[in-house]
Amino acid sequence: MTVLPISAEAISQAVAQALREDAGAGDLTADLIPSGATGHARVSARESCILCGTAWFDEVFRQLDTDVAVRWHGSDGEAVAPGTDICSLRGSATALLTGERTALNFLQTLSATATAARRYVDAVVETGATILDTRKTIPGLRDAQKYAVRCGGARNHRHGLYDAILVKENHIAAAGGLRQAVESARHRAPSVLLIVEVENLGQLREVLACRVDRVLLDNFSLEEMRQAVKERDAHEGNRVALEASGSVDLDGVRETARTGVDFISVGALTKHVRAVDFSMRFV
Image (cartoon, rainbow, N blue to C red; front, top):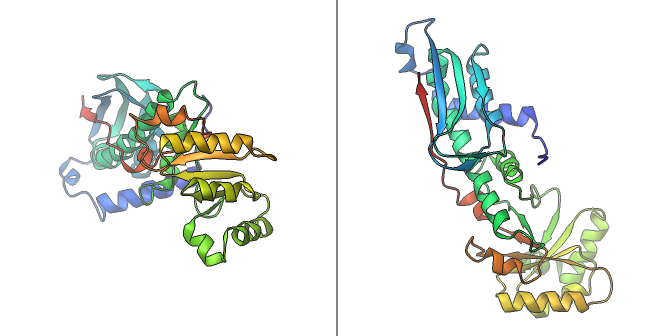
């Protein structure tokens, strides 16, 4: 699986901020360790997961001490079984102790995101639907979580407010109407993905008459989604993609996919993650 990379600068900035939060002016407990002491540690997974966050883990120790060596036994995007040693570390004992929690925080959060994404992707296999994330990310970790979603096999929705247009109810009201909002979007950013959110079939019919790329079906029932697909397919002109969104969980996502929608956006991939349990122990 090919996963689009993330910039080294983004990783460095996220790690630097996390270390400032945790270590501040210095690690008072690690300072008890004799100067020059070295250590050897292993990190293991206590549960099954999709591994993600190795670059952030490495960067934590690089910023603390460039002589710390990390040897990985797996790569981002790979499935890991419970009890598996995923990496080993050698170097300054002080650096290993100071960086332990920050490094594991990145690893457990990003692996959790990738694992959630993989579960949703597996649940809709062979339906034709694509799982998307949302902007409901942990503040400061959007780049990282979007990367983790890709490692899990899902795809990214818009990254932020700057790379796609999503017209919702309040935008339509402020713009003076749906057609005015769509025309303004096409005039200002003709090549940018244009999505319009609708809350009922009547709004869908109105949007299908406009030049949009995708329609977001907000909290539609399964029957409403099936009807939306029928009306989209019967509409003359360019085929508009349909995206289901709102209260989609793992138990119901396959039924949602089977309605014929093209995309399913799931906020839970990034906002409801439960950290994967990793352990780091000195050998």
